[in-house]
Length: 314
Image (cartoon, rainbow, N blue to C red; front, side, top):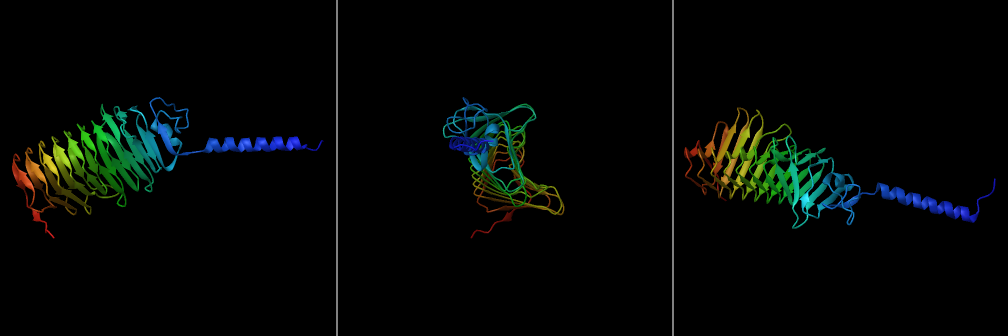
């Protein structure tokens, strides 16, 4: 057997380096991935090699990374499973997600340690579906500057989770526009013509709804805002400031609870007008608190039903 020559050794070294490079490229993930209507899912989702779908981009994006749609068009529903990630449409881009019967636009389902953001996305929900975004199992989820037509947002985290929904509009939801069963904040959100509730806050299996909403608008919904506790031992609180609740088919703001549970609604600086039944409706086992600086007038059955607790001004 001959001894390896210097040329043999150099050749083997080059082959080894090339093999290592190929292996590294094959395993590489992106901190930032891109999708486009002119992209292909055989690409690696880097700039200039865009993918076609969010689903493909999710598979090649590092935890904590970002996926950006850079061209207007439809990108299809997707799931975020056990991964911290931001999914966004670029400024000036309409990144559309169409939901057909029985489906979801975005499903978030993690282990409870994920930080997720959805930004500048457009949802169109049809058929028998009524939820565009469903989020459960996360540490934090932010939904920013999104527009939803035909379906709403459902947040079902645990007691330690946090949800932030801002600058988001839900139109013509087949049922609820905004549903939260875990802690959350809404800022400058609008619900228009929901067949169910503009905003519903409830107790859940993992955590109870502890929600604050500022500059919230619900108009033309069956119910404007409903805050309820359905399980003994649970506690739900909702605070509304500078809300506008109008033209609901039934109540403007309703609170109720079952025996052994508590529901607390606090309202300040808000306008609750021209709803079909009651403006403020305080039901059994619930507390309805007002700062007494609200405009509640023109509601069909009565402006107030039940008793209001005053909120002390400091």
